[in-house]
Length: 294
Image (cartoon, rainbow, N blue to C red; front, side):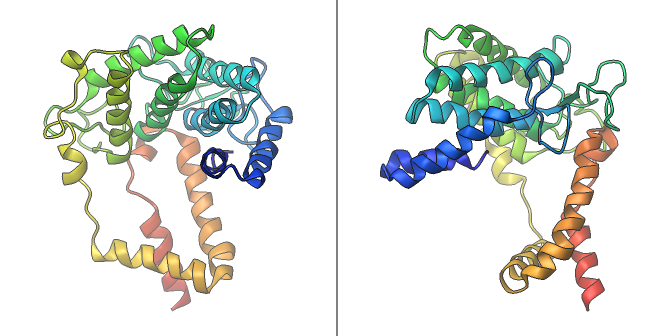
């Protein structure tokens, strides 16, 4: 469904009916999409009762854009804000303004707290997607929509929580957002970029003041340009994966992707600190795969 956002954008740009029809097909998928007892969408049909924070972005970005550009505004805006609020009601981490990564209504997932159904940590990239859907939704949500004040309140508390957890030395946030004091934690440029965008957009929309939250391109964004580093090994692995997909689809679909998805599933579902603080798995997957075929 996340890709549907681009389908709507292409239709808005071209007015080509085929893109409108494609977007309508995606919109229809929401009619029978499974949800928890409170209406919260499952992260996937294959993940019963699990609601993940990044999944809110994936579905609701499409709905808000569909409602704004194509139609069915009442359903799209009502459903999108309902999902944002349901996630907040479950995953809010005390009074920090931050949100935990996932909730399992059934308490069956390996990562879930049996008492609360919650995952244990605040993951930067997942929270970044949620931050984006807040500001992006508010850009198109009607001013008189009944849920708008609640979405604004979530945004305000989140921005304040991010202000308190930003690393003053780099302008970045950590992989586990609120545990920057741990030596095995690290700065996450992906989540940080989304946080910086969200804060600046909140300023642009008039929700927070620039005097308190204003970003300096020289100071607060410097970490985004200084932090990323790719070695020759990284380039080799990415190139190999690209070549595999282009010249040997069978290798990609029968071996590399299944192994990657299995490890990714273990990593994401655990949502735990030790898993979140491990090094990326892509190198391990690609190197082992290439060695097995040499």
